[in-house]
Length: 237
Image (cartoon, rainbow, N blue to C red; front, side, top):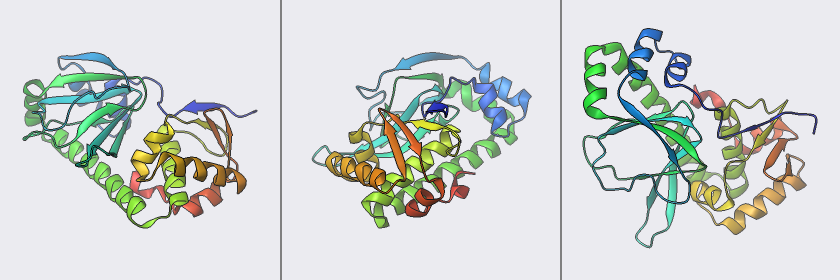
């Protein structure tokens, strides 16, 4: 292809490295990295954490992608958020109303709230830092709500591809994206059927917006697919 591809799952990233790149002071990032924790491998075929249970853990994604999901009364699943390498999931005061499942095979650092909270309590700048990250994830959630509520099926998938490229650090004008999602996962994110997702991908190719080679996606016209998706990356900052 002549252009380097990159997996959306991302390379494995150290906790301190990710926190520093997100704007945290190095000494505070080191404190969190030294917090007692274990690194576990999470397979995508079954839930990592079920909804409705106490959530006294803090999670940090070293590699791969985690999803948060909810299900309706008939068991149909909606993926409501993604966490890429460098992202975290904070503890809950009440039982979490969402489950956690990996999109691809992932490595996740798991710590306990009893170790995490005293570090944050002793350093108010950490609380401000995590509040800013929480605001960022809220902005992503608002964009997803707009995506599923108002955009058409083509724009929904195009928007997800644009966001995934941006959050993965892919330069869409120079490299290709290694699509981490199954068609069913894309359907669960964008609120449609996997059959319709397949039609959308074919339509994006017919329009000359993307080219697929297996799981690799080349953005043939980045400006145009952004327009189709109504994608503006400022909400990711």
